[in-house]
Image (tube, rainbow, N blue to C red):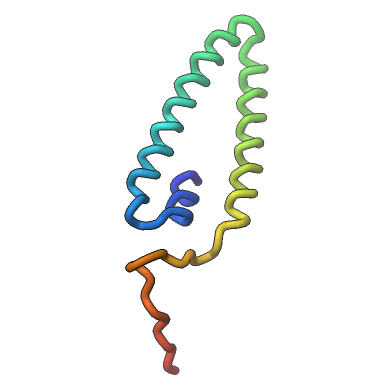
Length: 90
């Protein structure tokens, strides 16, 4: 979903940089999450790790829904990429 939100909300000339940033942030958060889960695993047990992961996924799903809800269906491009509308002839 991150890639879809970035593609919809970023102009063409910055899209590659934005995707790289989002992918890097995702991998950093994944690594930190694995380290924290490994430390908490011995204290609480695997069932609570799965419950915490499910809660995080539910929170991410709600955040993604709220972000995607406000995104336009077909975003208008800014600058030189914007072409005039083509009339439809039946």
